Image (cartoon, rainbow, N blue to C red; front, side):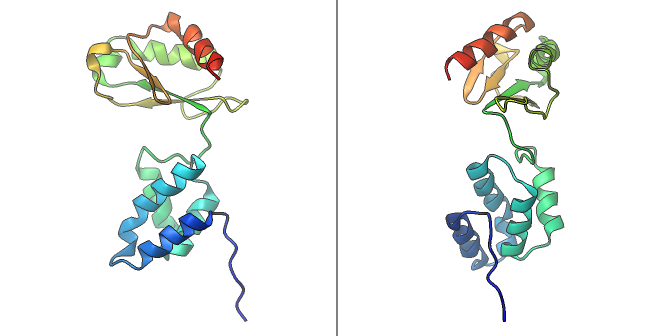
Length: 163
């Protein structure tokens, strides 16, 4: 007698994956599925990866490979505020590395980490297309231009105050 499998993924996501399985080459929907999962939970946990692999009937290694290959996917929870420092050429030339250093120092974390209170994460990104405003930092959907290391404490304070 077979037992019903209990998933941590929510029903609408499971239904989406099941619909993808009905299509020709269902494995080609893997990236879309991972986007949907990360959109709901904010990151892809090991459990999410295992469940997607099981439901989509592809090897876990395949799902993990896709999740780690694409920079967009996150395997750890991100902070409420995701700080992205552009490290593209124009921003780097104008001091983005110093700005990144100021964020790391101010928050006490490294790139890819989240503060212990769960508020902030730091990541580097490549060109976001506003090179004339370099160096550029985004925090969630807000864009900060011509950022200097000295502005970092005020930026973080202002973000916390809007909470």
